[in-house]
Image 1 (cartoon, rainbow, N blue to C red):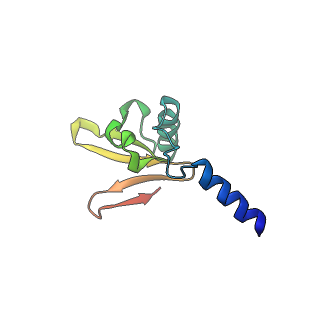
Image 2 (spheres, rainbow, N blue to C red):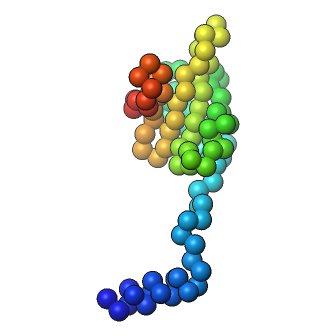
Length: 100
C-alpha cells in the first residue's frame, strides 16, 4: 500500500497531467478503414462516401471516425461512425446511433 501512495505522490509532485488529450483526429487510413467496414456491412459503394471533417475534428468525438454516405440522386446522406469495435449509423427519426 505504501508503494502505491509513494507512486501517486511522485506523480502529483512531478506534475503529471492526466487530463491531457492523448487521442488525435483520425488519419486518412482510419477513414479508409471505416469506409471499408461500412461497405462490407451495407454493400454501399466506397466512392459515394466522404470524410465528415466537422465531426472528425471535434475533441468530443475522439475515438470515433465519422463518414457520410451520399444517397442516390442527391436525396441527402447517411451519417456513419466507426471505432475499434462498432459500426453505427445515425437514425435521425429516433435521434440515436444504431449499431449495424
